[in-house]
Image (cartoon, rainbow, N blue to C red; front, side, top):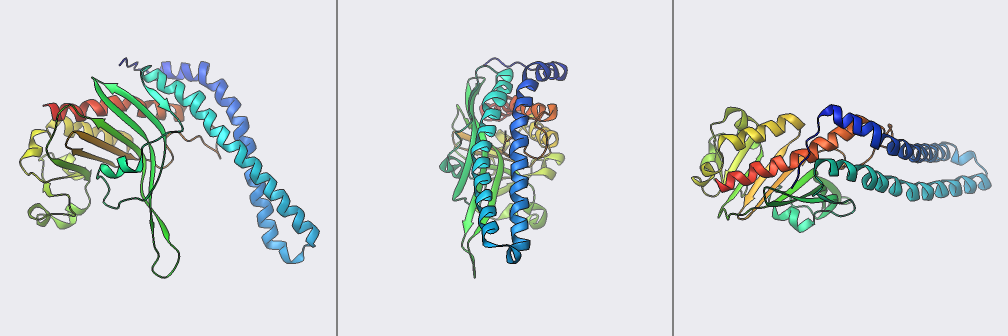
Length: 310
């Protein structure tokens, strides 16, 4: 795999010369979609407020106009998103590595997400896009944007759609079998339960391990079914790497080592490569964020896979 780390100044030049003309064309589509969406909201709001005062002909005409506008928006917006991914995101990814393969409309399967064991609320609905695969040091990895939800039946009403996870999901195929299950998750419950959770099974994940790394233990909790084994892979370099990623991106990170597989997730509000709708899409900051995230993936893979090898 050939990585091409690019200084900010070079990325700015690439943005200006290569991406900005494409983004400016896309921004014209964005404006159309946004204006038509506002017009739809305006018509619907006016109908609700004045319904009882309008003649039937005007009601019918307003409803018909709303339906037509919605159909136009639904036909334009998917094309806008697709062009952003295929013409902009694909170019950014190629600047990180020409060996990465990017499939905008594909994603991670629901079974692969559940298999990671990262989230104890098991989702039954999953939307995933931006599937990307590559290699780092001979280790194969794949990642995608994921929006996982669970449809829960309501007690006295309709079912509720509960969010399980939204962000980046990464799967690494390890060379070595771990013969254990290790979970590294955001530190919440251990702060409340204290030493009790070190002596008892906790939520099916095993024993809570104190790594002795003060900053790491303040951000993460480590659970395992073999208390002695995690010390073999949780060396300072891995702990420092996870702390650095958490501080760099400002998002919650979770990791699981399950036999010959490693899974990594990082929360994020919007879909991974979803273009803006309200604000202009011609923004260097957005391109830089995408580039930084893609560039971090081989670094994450290398840190996690080396921990198991050692």
